[in-house]
Length: 342
Image 1 (cartoon, rainbow, N blue to C red):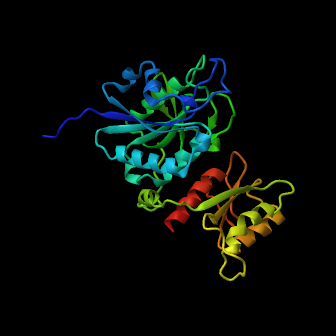
Image 2 (image 1 turned 45 degrees about the vertical axis):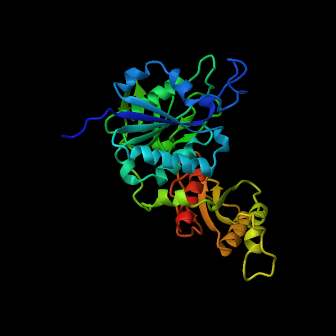
Image 3 (image 1 turned 45 degrees about the horizontal axis):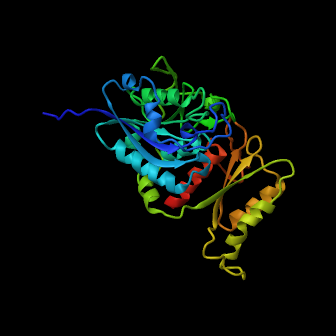
Protein backbone atom coordinates (compact mmCIF):
# COMPACT_ATOMS: atom_id res chain seq x y z
CA UNK A 1 0.00 0.00 0.00
CA UNK A 2 1.34 3.44 -0.95
CA UNK A 3 2.32 5.65 1.95
CA UNK A 4 0.15 8.73 2.27
CA UNK A 5 1.83 12.05 2.94
CA UNK A 6 0.76 15.60 3.64
CA UNK A 7 1.36 17.83 0.63
CA UNK A 8 3.65 20.82 1.01
CA UNK A 9 4.05 24.25 -0.52
CA UNK A 10 7.59 25.59 -0.21
CA UNK A 11 8.25 29.33 0.09
CA UNK A 12 11.80 30.44 -0.74
CA UNK A 13 12.59 34.03 0.22
CA UNK A 14 15.26 36.19 -1.39
CA UNK A 15 14.52 39.67 0.03
CA UNK A 16 13.33 42.59 -2.09
CA UNK A 17 10.78 45.34 -1.49
CA UNK A 18 8.27 42.75 -0.32
CA UNK A 19 10.57 42.31 2.70
CA UNK A 20 11.41 46.01 2.98
CA UNK A 21 10.85 48.52 5.76
CA UNK A 22 10.82 52.31 6.04
CA UNK A 23 10.88 54.89 8.82
CA UNK A 24 7.30 55.87 8.00
CA UNK A 25 4.34 53.78 6.90
CA UNK A 26 3.65 56.49 4.33
CA UNK A 27 7.03 56.07 2.63
CA UNK A 28 6.71 53.73 -0.35
CA UNK A 29 9.88 54.97 -2.07
CA UNK A 30 12.58 55.73 0.51
CA UNK A 31 12.53 52.31 2.14
CA UNK A 32 15.27 49.75 2.68
CA UNK A 33 14.68 46.44 0.91
CA UNK A 34 15.30 42.99 2.39
CA UNK A 35 14.75 43.66 6.11
CA UNK A 36 11.94 41.25 7.04
CA UNK A 37 12.39 37.50 7.35
CA UNK A 38 10.21 34.99 5.56
CA UNK A 39 8.41 33.80 8.70
CA UNK A 40 7.29 37.34 9.48
CA UNK A 41 6.21 37.85 5.87
CA UNK A 42 4.03 34.77 5.89
CA UNK A 43 2.52 35.63 9.27
CA UNK A 44 1.17 38.84 7.73
CA UNK A 45 -0.78 37.02 4.99
CA UNK A 46 -4.47 36.72 5.95
CA UNK A 47 -6.35 33.53 5.16
CA UNK A 48 -3.27 31.58 4.10
CA UNK A 49 -4.39 28.38 5.83
CA UNK A 50 -7.65 28.55 3.95
CA UNK A 51 -5.78 28.66 0.65
CA UNK A 52 -3.45 25.83 1.69
CA UNK A 53 -6.47 23.62 2.38
CA UNK A 54 -4.64 21.21 4.68
CA UNK A 55 -1.25 21.44 3.01
CA UNK A 56 1.85 22.28 5.04
CA UNK A 57 3.80 25.47 4.38
CA UNK A 58 7.59 25.17 4.48
CA UNK A 59 9.64 28.38 4.49
CA UNK A 60 13.31 28.90 3.73
CA UNK A 61 15.41 32.08 3.59
CA UNK A 62 17.68 31.53 0.57
CA UNK A 63 18.95 35.13 0.48
CA UNK A 64 18.16 38.57 1.89
CA UNK A 65 19.09 41.16 -0.73
CA UNK A 66 17.75 44.06 -2.72
CA UNK A 67 17.10 42.46 -6.10
CA UNK A 68 19.06 45.19 -7.88
CA UNK A 69 22.06 43.43 -6.32
CA UNK A 70 21.12 39.99 -7.64
CA UNK A 71 24.19 37.87 -8.40
CA UNK A 72 25.11 34.61 -10.07
CA UNK A 73 25.87 33.15 -6.65
CA UNK A 74 22.33 33.77 -5.42
CA UNK A 75 20.92 32.45 -8.70
CA UNK A 76 22.96 29.28 -8.32
CA UNK A 77 21.82 28.70 -4.75
CA UNK A 78 18.20 29.47 -5.60
CA UNK A 79 18.14 27.12 -8.60
CA UNK A 80 19.61 24.29 -6.56
CA UNK A 81 17.12 24.75 -3.72
CA UNK A 82 14.19 24.95 -6.14
CA UNK A 83 15.30 21.79 -7.94
CA UNK A 84 15.78 20.00 -4.62
CA UNK A 85 12.26 20.78 -3.47
CA UNK A 86 10.66 20.03 -6.84
CA UNK A 87 12.16 16.56 -6.65
CA UNK A 88 10.24 15.80 -3.42
CA UNK A 89 7.03 13.85 -4.00
CA UNK A 90 5.15 15.71 -1.27
CA UNK A 91 5.87 19.17 -2.69
CA UNK A 92 3.06 20.46 -4.92
CA UNK A 93 4.54 23.82 -5.81
CA UNK A 94 7.08 26.49 -4.94
CA UNK A 95 6.66 30.19 -4.23
CA UNK A 96 9.63 32.55 -4.41
CA UNK A 97 9.46 36.02 -2.87
CA UNK A 98 11.68 38.38 -4.86
CA UNK A 99 12.38 42.03 -5.56
CA UNK A 100 10.72 43.53 -8.61
CA UNK A 101 13.81 45.05 -10.25
CA UNK A 102 15.33 41.80 -11.54
CA UNK A 103 12.41 39.41 -11.09
CA UNK A 104 12.07 38.90 -14.85
CA UNK A 105 15.72 37.86 -15.14
CA UNK A 106 15.51 35.40 -12.25
CA UNK A 107 12.29 33.96 -13.65
CA UNK A 108 13.86 33.40 -17.06
CA UNK A 109 17.03 31.97 -15.51
CA UNK A 110 15.02 29.37 -13.57
CA UNK A 111 12.96 28.61 -16.67
CA UNK A 112 16.18 27.99 -18.60
CA UNK A 113 18.06 25.81 -16.10
CA UNK A 114 15.55 23.78 -14.09
CA UNK A 115 15.04 20.21 -15.35
CA UNK A 116 12.22 20.09 -17.90
CA UNK A 117 10.58 17.08 -16.25
CA UNK A 118 10.29 19.03 -12.99
CA UNK A 119 8.78 22.11 -14.64
CA UNK A 120 6.32 19.99 -16.60
CA UNK A 121 4.88 18.61 -13.37
CA UNK A 122 4.89 21.45 -10.84
CA UNK A 123 4.75 25.28 -10.75
CA UNK A 124 7.48 27.62 -9.60
CA UNK A 125 5.80 30.96 -8.79
CA UNK A 126 7.72 34.17 -8.23
CA UNK A 127 5.98 37.02 -6.48
CA UNK A 128 6.92 40.46 -5.22
CA UNK A 129 5.65 43.80 -3.98
CA UNK A 130 5.89 47.43 -5.00
CA UNK A 131 5.41 48.62 -1.42
CA UNK A 132 7.45 47.63 1.64
CA UNK A 133 6.14 45.20 4.23
CA UNK A 134 5.14 47.84 6.78
CA UNK A 135 3.52 50.25 4.34
CA UNK A 136 0.14 51.70 5.25
CA UNK A 137 -1.36 49.49 2.53
CA UNK A 138 1.19 46.84 1.56
CA UNK A 139 0.60 44.78 -1.57
CA UNK A 140 2.91 41.94 -0.59
CA UNK A 141 0.45 39.88 1.52
CA UNK A 142 -2.11 39.70 -1.30
CA UNK A 143 0.58 38.84 -3.84
CA UNK A 144 1.90 36.03 -1.63
CA UNK A 145 -1.62 34.71 -1.13
CA UNK A 146 -2.24 34.79 -4.89
CA UNK A 147 1.06 33.03 -5.54
CA UNK A 148 0.10 30.23 -3.15
CA UNK A 149 -3.24 29.95 -4.96
CA UNK A 150 -1.37 29.42 -8.23
CA UNK A 151 1.13 27.02 -6.64
CA UNK A 152 -1.74 24.83 -5.39
CA UNK A 153 -3.80 24.93 -8.59
CA UNK A 154 -4.27 21.53 -10.23
CA UNK A 155 -2.38 21.34 -13.51
CA UNK A 156 -0.28 24.45 -12.93
CA UNK A 157 3.30 24.08 -14.14
CA UNK A 158 6.32 25.99 -15.38
CA UNK A 159 7.98 29.13 -14.06
CA UNK A 160 5.47 31.91 -13.46
CA UNK A 161 5.31 35.39 -11.96
CA UNK A 162 2.31 36.68 -10.01
CA UNK A 163 1.74 40.35 -9.28
CA UNK A 164 -1.46 42.34 -8.71
CA UNK A 165 -3.64 39.34 -9.52
CA UNK A 166 -2.04 38.68 -12.91
CA UNK A 167 -0.08 35.55 -13.78
CA UNK A 168 2.77 35.88 -16.29
CA UNK A 169 5.03 33.35 -17.99
CA UNK A 170 8.74 33.67 -17.25
CA UNK A 171 9.66 34.10 -20.92
CA UNK A 172 7.37 37.11 -21.41
CA UNK A 173 7.15 38.91 -18.06
CA UNK A 174 8.72 42.36 -17.88
CA UNK A 175 8.62 45.18 -15.36
CA UNK A 176 7.06 48.14 -17.15
CA UNK A 177 6.33 50.70 -14.43
CA UNK A 178 8.48 52.30 -11.77
CA UNK A 179 5.95 52.54 -8.93
CA UNK A 180 2.42 51.34 -9.80
CA UNK A 181 1.26 48.18 -8.04
CA UNK A 182 0.48 46.44 -11.34
CA UNK A 183 4.05 46.94 -12.54
CA UNK A 184 4.44 43.93 -14.84
CA UNK A 185 3.31 43.05 -18.34
CA UNK A 186 3.69 40.19 -20.77
CA UNK A 187 3.55 42.52 -23.76
CA UNK A 188 1.75 41.30 -26.84
CA UNK A 189 1.97 37.70 -25.58
CA UNK A 190 -0.53 38.52 -22.83
CA UNK A 191 -0.85 36.99 -19.34
CA UNK A 192 -1.28 33.30 -18.65
CA UNK A 193 -4.03 33.72 -16.07
CA UNK A 194 -5.68 35.88 -13.45
CA UNK A 195 -6.24 35.16 -9.77
CA UNK A 196 -9.83 36.04 -8.94
CA UNK A 197 -11.53 35.35 -5.60
CA UNK A 198 -8.83 32.82 -4.60
CA UNK A 199 -9.13 30.89 -7.86
CA UNK A 200 -7.18 30.87 -11.09
CA UNK A 201 -8.86 31.85 -14.36
CA UNK A 202 -6.65 30.46 -17.10
CA UNK A 203 -6.58 32.38 -20.39
CA UNK A 204 -3.65 30.55 -22.00
CA UNK A 205 -2.01 27.17 -21.62
CA UNK A 206 0.49 26.84 -18.81
CA UNK A 207 3.97 27.63 -20.20
CA UNK A 208 5.94 24.64 -21.50
CA UNK A 209 9.48 23.91 -20.36
CA UNK A 210 12.24 24.60 -22.91
CA UNK A 211 12.74 21.71 -25.31
CA UNK A 212 16.05 22.69 -26.88
CA UNK A 213 18.32 22.94 -23.87
CA UNK A 214 20.76 20.49 -22.33
CA UNK A 215 19.35 18.38 -19.50
CA UNK A 216 22.59 19.02 -17.61
CA UNK A 217 22.04 22.80 -17.43
CA UNK A 218 21.52 22.88 -13.68
CA UNK A 219 24.53 20.62 -13.06
CA UNK A 220 26.70 22.98 -15.10
CA UNK A 221 25.37 25.98 -13.18
CA UNK A 222 26.23 24.19 -9.94
CA UNK A 223 29.80 23.50 -11.01
CA UNK A 224 30.88 26.64 -12.88
CA UNK A 225 32.16 29.32 -10.49
CA UNK A 226 33.09 32.04 -12.97
CA UNK A 227 30.21 32.67 -15.32
CA UNK A 228 30.91 33.94 -18.85
CA UNK A 229 30.93 37.72 -19.00
CA UNK A 230 28.15 39.07 -21.22
CA UNK A 231 27.38 42.79 -21.42
CA UNK A 232 24.49 44.77 -22.91
CA UNK A 233 24.96 47.79 -25.18
CA UNK A 234 22.21 49.98 -26.58
CA UNK A 235 21.63 51.58 -29.94
CA UNK A 236 20.49 55.21 -30.00
CA UNK A 237 20.88 58.35 -32.09
CA UNK A 238 24.60 59.05 -32.37
CA UNK A 239 25.66 55.67 -30.96
CA UNK A 240 29.31 54.86 -31.52
CA UNK A 241 31.73 52.03 -30.93
CA UNK A 242 33.79 53.47 -28.07
CA UNK A 243 32.02 51.46 -25.35
CA UNK A 244 32.38 48.21 -27.26
CA UNK A 245 36.05 48.92 -27.94
CA UNK A 246 36.62 49.61 -24.23
CA UNK A 247 34.97 46.31 -23.34
CA UNK A 248 37.13 44.56 -25.92
CA UNK A 249 40.44 45.86 -24.56
CA UNK A 250 41.17 42.85 -22.29
CA UNK A 251 40.07 40.48 -25.08
CA UNK A 252 42.39 42.12 -27.60
CA UNK A 253 45.22 42.07 -25.05
CA UNK A 254 44.81 38.32 -24.67
CA UNK A 255 44.80 37.70 -28.44
CA UNK A 256 47.73 35.32 -29.08
CA UNK A 257 48.23 36.87 -32.54
CA UNK A 258 48.72 40.33 -31.07
CA UNK A 259 51.82 41.82 -29.50
CA UNK A 260 50.16 43.42 -26.49
CA UNK A 261 50.58 42.46 -22.86
CA UNK A 262 48.17 39.85 -21.42
CA UNK A 263 45.30 41.09 -19.22
CA UNK A 264 45.48 41.04 -15.46
CA UNK A 265 44.68 37.66 -13.96
CA UNK A 266 41.68 39.17 -12.16
CA UNK A 267 40.13 40.50 -15.36
CA UNK A 268 37.10 38.64 -16.70
CA UNK A 269 37.34 38.68 -20.50
CA UNK A 270 34.29 39.57 -22.49
CA UNK A 271 32.58 36.53 -24.00
CA UNK A 272 29.35 37.97 -25.35
CA UNK A 273 27.49 41.15 -26.24
CA UNK A 274 23.74 41.70 -26.45
CA UNK A 275 22.68 44.73 -28.45
CA UNK A 276 19.43 46.44 -27.52
CA UNK A 277 18.78 47.70 -31.01
CA UNK A 278 16.26 50.26 -32.15
CA UNK A 279 13.08 49.07 -33.82
CA UNK A 280 13.61 45.69 -35.47
CA UNK A 281 17.07 45.39 -33.93
CA UNK A 282 18.65 48.10 -36.07
CA UNK A 283 22.18 49.26 -35.18
CA UNK A 284 24.03 52.51 -35.90
CA UNK A 285 26.77 51.97 -38.50
CA UNK A 286 29.55 53.02 -36.09
CA UNK A 287 28.31 50.67 -33.39
CA UNK A 288 27.88 47.95 -35.99
CA UNK A 289 31.52 48.32 -37.06
CA UNK A 290 32.63 47.89 -33.44
CA UNK A 291 30.47 44.79 -33.11
CA UNK A 292 32.18 43.31 -36.15
CA UNK A 293 35.51 43.89 -34.42
CA UNK A 294 34.14 42.11 -31.36
CA UNK A 295 33.03 39.14 -33.41
CA UNK A 296 36.44 38.94 -35.08
CA UNK A 297 37.95 38.54 -31.60
CA UNK A 298 35.64 35.63 -30.82
CA UNK A 299 32.95 37.53 -28.90
CA UNK A 300 29.39 36.32 -29.55
CA UNK A 301 27.02 39.11 -30.61
CA UNK A 302 23.24 38.79 -30.22
CA UNK A 303 20.76 41.35 -31.50
CA UNK A 304 17.63 42.23 -29.51
CA UNK A 305 15.40 45.29 -29.39
CA UNK A 306 14.83 48.03 -26.87
CA UNK A 307 11.12 48.04 -27.82
CA UNK A 308 8.82 46.80 -25.06
CA UNK A 309 6.70 44.75 -27.48
CA UNK A 310 7.39 42.73 -30.57
CA UNK A 311 10.45 40.67 -31.47
CA UNK A 312 13.37 41.05 -33.85
CA UNK A 313 12.52 39.50 -37.21
CA UNK A 314 15.57 38.31 -39.12
CA UNK A 315 16.10 39.17 -42.78
CA UNK A 316 18.38 37.72 -45.45
CA UNK A 317 20.81 40.56 -44.78
CA UNK A 318 20.89 40.15 -40.99
CA UNK A 319 24.53 40.06 -39.96
CA UNK A 320 24.17 39.12 -36.28
CA UNK A 321 22.07 36.40 -34.71
CA UNK A 322 18.85 37.54 -33.06
CA UNK A 323 17.57 36.91 -29.54
CA UNK A 324 14.62 34.74 -30.64
CA UNK A 325 12.10 37.06 -29.02
CA UNK A 326 13.91 37.57 -25.73
CA UNK A 327 14.34 41.03 -24.22
CA UNK A 328 17.93 42.29 -23.87
CA UNK A 329 18.25 41.25 -20.21
CA UNK A 330 16.84 37.78 -20.85
CA UNK A 331 18.95 37.39 -23.99
CA UNK A 332 21.98 38.10 -21.80
CA UNK A 333 20.99 35.29 -19.43
CA UNK A 334 20.42 32.91 -22.35
CA UNK A 335 23.78 33.75 -23.90
CA UNK A 336 25.62 33.31 -20.59
CA UNK A 337 24.11 29.86 -20.17
CA UNK A 338 24.89 28.90 -23.75
CA UNK A 339 28.51 29.97 -23.37
CA UNK A 340 28.71 28.19 -20.02
CA UNK A 341 27.56 24.90 -21.55
CA UNK A 342 29.98 25.31 -24.44
